[in-house]
Length: 229
Image (tube, rainbow, N blue to C red; front, side, top):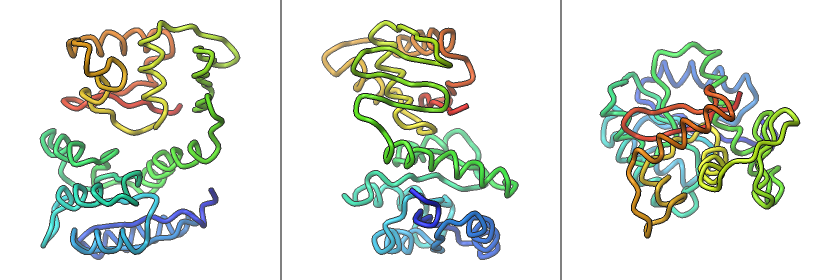
């Protein structure tokens, strides 16, 4: 998908922030739309059908947490990428955001170059989904072959035990997205298998040893995400 076709909705009650962020992202070639509160964000989301929403938390009329929850209830917006864009960096606020359905968190203030880089990282998922070959996941220098159950990194084939492979494939399927621990347990081990949360930590440790430590990020109190190098 070309940049000019990508639609980003910015939601913030501070006009200066909307202006600055809009300016930098428009210069990158994206289509930019804005809203100043949660209620307006829901309305604009339905109208625009954005690919990415940057959503402030503390806003009048309806805060970002509630707006995110309501946006996720709309069938046509279930797959939209949502990142909270806020000055609040407390752990409880981040956990509440992820519980509401957010994919990531950007803390203000943020330098324009860093913001643009973060947006590009979030949007890589769109590129992956549009170019993905059935049975393959390609992220950076890594290829995950889901049909033949192997991983290739820098032309080197890596064979992983089944659960490590399934966990890796899940995280890499949406680079940058934070997968909550309960979702990981459900997707990889299933509801019929009783395992402790420590099981995930052990498998992540093994993946870090085999694939590389920098690819896997821990989000305290929430879960894990895969980061493209």
